[in-house]
Image (cartoon, rainbow over all chains, first blue to last red; front, side, top):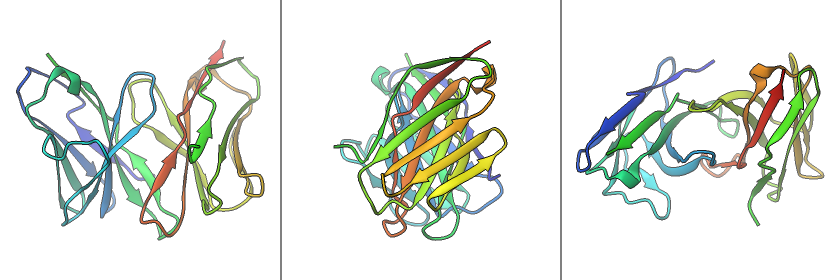
Length: 117
Length: 112
């Protein structure tokens, strides 16, 4: 099956630090990637849709200046948490789309656990 | 009303039991249905996907779609402790530009 990687898998940082998370599709090209946030024992919360070569589309309530998304190539999207604070601590998961129009499937990365002290 | 409803559980069954996980949906335009398994602290893993009503089988897993009732199910036969995870249903329509709708997930524990 399709493989999506994320790096780093875990990061601990001080408040005020900016953190970059990479999402890569390893064996396919993905024009569309999604970024999710997940709190313990809760479901996925879609943050934004990342399209290669264009600006990301953010969900309502997600600060685009706080969560900067760059989809510079067909295999790489990055999420930068700018000036992270403890309330940004969460599990961040990306996914990439593969498949024919109307039959697309999302393949998820393993997630990045962010802890802001 | 949410687009996709899924009982969060938790669901606890003895090893070897048949497990039935279900989702209902309200949008009759949904045509593509997926089931994901998510272990604790991991990303969701695609288990099965189907594009039509009826059953699709893969090993111990069977996905069932009933479009007339707007109801999908995932059956796990001979459940194993390694099946303990959260199971998410997801669905999409062909004409909304990669818009997916997820259930909240059902937490399953298989007791040895």
